[in-house]
Structure formats: C-alpha cells, structure tokens
Image 1: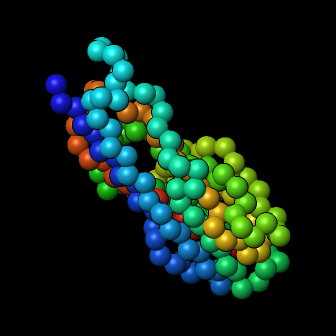
Image 2: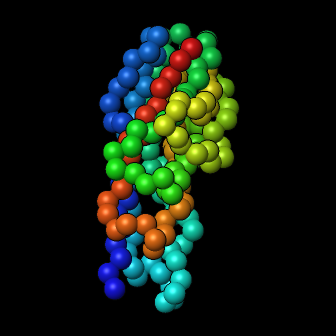
Length: 155
C-alpha cells in the first residue's frame, strides 16, 4: 500500500510596505509524509508535525521606532484540505531585543482571515517562527497540499 502526502508551506519571501514599515519574511517549509510514518499497521499518522523553531525569519523595520506595530497573519490556500490545521508561533524576540515585543509565543491557528499575531515597538530582526500542522490522516486523498502564509504590519 502506497500512501504519500506531500505538504508544502510557503511564506511570502518579499518585502511589503505599509505605513512606512518594511517587513521582510524569509523561509518556507515542505514536509513529505510517507506510509512509513505510520508505526504499526492499522494506525493513523502522528497527530502533529512541527517545523524547525526558526523555520521562517521575520524582520520589521519601521520609519518611526516609537510606535506600536501590530503583525497580522493569514493564509491563502493554493491546494488545501479543510481537515488540515496549520498553526504558527514566535519562538524568540529575534536578534534586536532592545524594544518591546509581546504575544505570539503559543501556537495559533492560521485561517484565511487576518488575525492579530503579535505586537512590537521598533526595529526587530530575524524573529524566528515555527509551524505546526495537525489533521493529517490516511483518510485524506493522497496529493500535494499547499498554502501561502502572509504577514501584514500596521501602526
């Protein structure tokens, strides 16, 4: 029996401009899930798959370093199944650390609607993000699934 599901996550890897803020997002995650991931006949796939803790790196460069910035996250499905649940979390403050950054330290589900991810003040470089996917099962059709993750910033 051949079961192979290929999951691809694409994070936008370009620069977006919003209200004099530059955000740069780099990184992607592709996970191949094979029948050999099932430990014993009759079982399903593991309930959770996680990316590396720094799978995506996000840099925020505002013109005004004293204003609060809200970072939003959403996904835009390319080929996705409703049973799949994709989550994201921030695993550290990045390399700046001189200014405030709050929220985003626990996994939150990424939907097709913008959702508040975290807030910060000032310049932050290489904020590491980690992804988690659940809902993978042998009952899903065997195919490639992909979605694009978008991050938006606002003052």
